[in-house]
Image 1 (cartoon, rainbow, N blue to C red):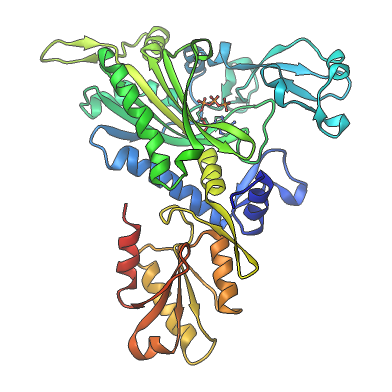
Image 2: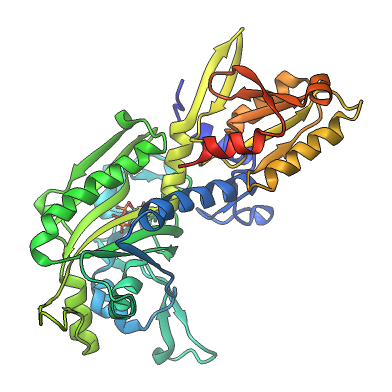
Length: 443
Ligand code: ATP
């Protein structure tokens, strides 16, 4: 049985060390979250899987790591200073704030979060534009010249480095530049756990193509990105590609599709794949006075590339992987909760159990654990409690394999290897275990 509410995921995440409320000992900070030991591993694995598929396995994409703080002119050129805003409505009575374009989901805090009604509306202000960029000050003097912004997306750092990357790498379109990093948006209505927060991480790639090739590459990335989630185990029936209607397109885009997932709160955007035309490079050319083109010295060919951008959220992807993996099943009158995470995403790959706490079994188990760790395979050692309970704890955090060290290990050098999903057990050689697991984890 899949998760029927987000609360089930929030509870499990907290109970087992995936995600904690930020500043919890001070009462928490609204919509800010910290990733615990398991969450930190899962997050790294999500980012590694993305980098592997977008950069390391491709000849045509390179990486970048640009600064969060950029020259304010960057945000003027990109349109963020003038246009990156949401329409804000204030309730003069209960002081709640709403997004005028999201009133279907709005609730009244004064009436126990019931849907807003006509009485509510009589206290509303007219909508006004609220810029979502966080402002800060560079240096010790707080004058207007020192104002800077925390980046609201990683993409602009890529556009500003287009020439640096293209010329140093002697790259010819089609080629892409990928980046993973934090972005900040002062969202009016954050919420739904880690789905919408003010500080989040993005995985974005700008793919520069000859203008006449944009449609072909747009179709390619649209499908490629959808398939990435499926390859990492996400149920394709819960995923869909939704093309934007013409009136929904951002000012820079001539075509956009959202990859959406059916969360317990409804179908929600997980990633956007946008064709951004030559908007960004042209704008930065105009504002910086630098020519941002592709120029081939031999053929004298010259053009401003078009851009296809797959833009994903790390935290949203992580939430989807957790929700999609969550399963409850009845076994012998008991409920088994199991996270069926793809083994490459699972924070702990192998849990190691000595059957009993004597006869040298703990020492032997720890030796085997070390041999796994030496191969970069994450492990968890647990010596206490009945074996069935130890299995259940690992099922709940998504550990794909558990091994038990018993009397036969000493005598014959074998261990029991138990599979999370099928719960079947096989006897394997302890010496060969690291290679066996590494093979199963290979992409
Ligand atoms: P939304 O419509 O949900 O606000 P968006 O269309 O503004 O999202 P993009 O600017 O396309 O989002 O950003 C790309 C991706 O970054 C999104 O698909 C999402 O995964 C992630 N993202 C954007 N805003 C947030 C946020 N406030 N919290 C968490 N992730 C976010």
